Length: 124
Image 1 (cartoon, rainbow, N blue to C red):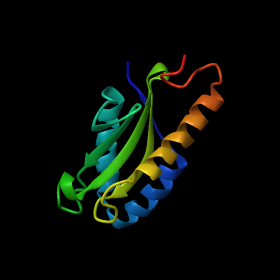
Image 2 (cartoon, rainbow, N blue to C red):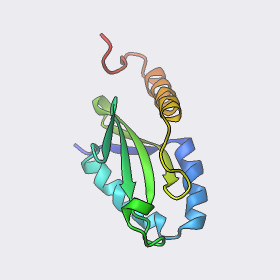
Image 3 (cartoon, rainbow, N blue to C red):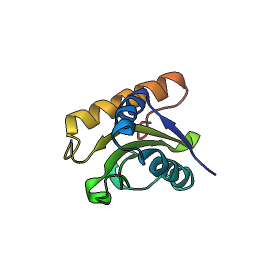
Image 4 (cartoon, rainbow, N blue to C red):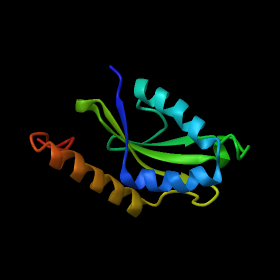
């Protein structure tokens, strides 16, 4: 079953800025969205259903190592994948633990508050 790929408001804000800077990013992300819909567990597993995906930005011409990073959160029960944030590797080397924890906490609050019958993963 395919997953729904859902961008968060934070992701949309950051993406808007990057679109202006890198025109090819739209097509780069469309391809990624199709891939994520079929195989959501891509990238480096950060734990707790959170992943970091490296993508190349064709208009930068630097490959994945100098491209963008996308942090995703997967809700397996509902077949949903949330795009939490995107950043340019040349602007931010890595996402720090504090920021990552905040992003995960925010998305869990949104996802599980809207569906109160569901429990957080790992809780009994």
